[in-house]
Length: 227
Image (tube, rainbow, N blue to C red; front, side, top):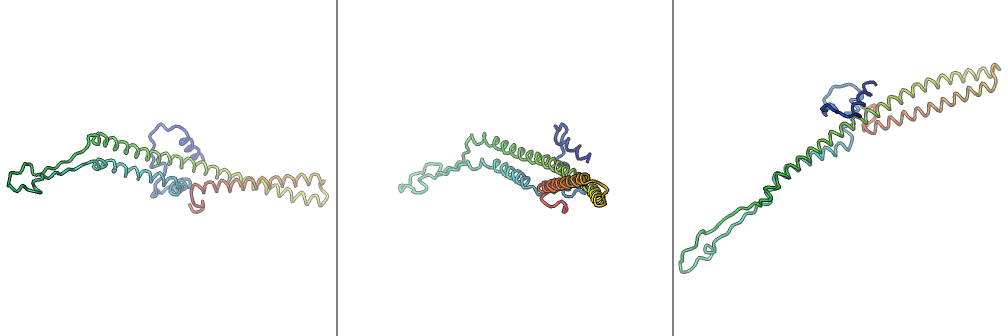
């Protein structure tokens, strides 16, 4: 639990050292048996927004390739054939040379703009990668927070269950004492009220536990028992 809190502080505060994003989300082949790391890895694999960001990176890679060859669409080729080659003069006069000419043109603006378009595409690719890295930090932080909520709720429910069970024992004893005439009705009613209060507290604690479990499973995408 202390380790989780320490990691939460690291994710929440400013990060001055270089972040190794391959360690923020451990890869599939990692052999770590820590439950929280398994949850983070599973959440990363199943969370839909992560796939959207990965698709953006793929698109940005295509955009770089496209920008590198876009200049070719502005190439203009020309071919002129001397009219005499088509309809030679009957008097046999000499044809003017050249008999034909060919040419290829490329606008100067294309040569100037293309490198900038490639740079823009590369910057967009870098932005897409940083957005994915940002998502890694977010997923790790939110899973750690939700997991901590779940552990706390689980502990609260366990403690409250013990308190409720203890109060139930007092209630059963008080009921028997009241039947035997050993205590007054008011004392018995106080014990009954205390027991009912703890029963309600247990119901609330159980609700909080189930809610925290559902919220964690929403991130992970599968029941906790399957992780």
